[in-house]
Length: 310
Image (cartoon, rainbow, N blue to C red):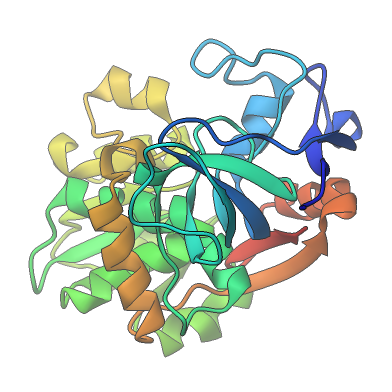
């Protein structure tokens, strides 16, 4: 007989990190086509901050009390009716679209899970979905070709660190916009560091005297506007965050939802498991320290991913 009580992150109103609580809940029961996963790791993401603060209410409203989180990796401990392909004891990774992964136990439709490659550490597996599928979608959106130059804002962040590696695999010249503290990591991954702030335009034009072919924005609307001002074709400007600016300028705004398939997740997991793509883990926090984890993430200076360990 397994446990009857689980622990889960909850918030009952919009606000800062202080609204986040870890509470006892009944262990969820898997429905038809679902499995129950005992979570071993759950990545956290900047979009969860915006949702929790109410900044994305018009696009992604919350019903209170709300759970939180999509990334997860863990072990199947229960199986609903009609499930094939997974059994109790299987290690899996994937995602929840119910804002529920930041918990000790979560039910997940089998179509949102894949087997966890044994080479993947739990923290990396639990951090894979959002950054992996978002990076895949962002790169695909700008159709990079070998020899082209692509600029990437927030190039050392969770998604950015994966985007630049995917671009380099395509033999693209990558300009990685980040702080000077990330120069060594970017250079080691064959990316040209460019520092945000004063002088950014001059640095970009010096690094790409023949122009920038495409621009992937992972930070905000100012970079979408910058790309347009630099003459990058609008259909080759992609943002994962500045939706209003993308609509205003007619640029791309593809996110993880456009690449959330078992096939893409399997491809990304294989790249990471083989060592072709690295997902840096910036920090690990126990579930009860979820507020601290989001304080660190909110500073927006994290290289790679922050992971909760239930």
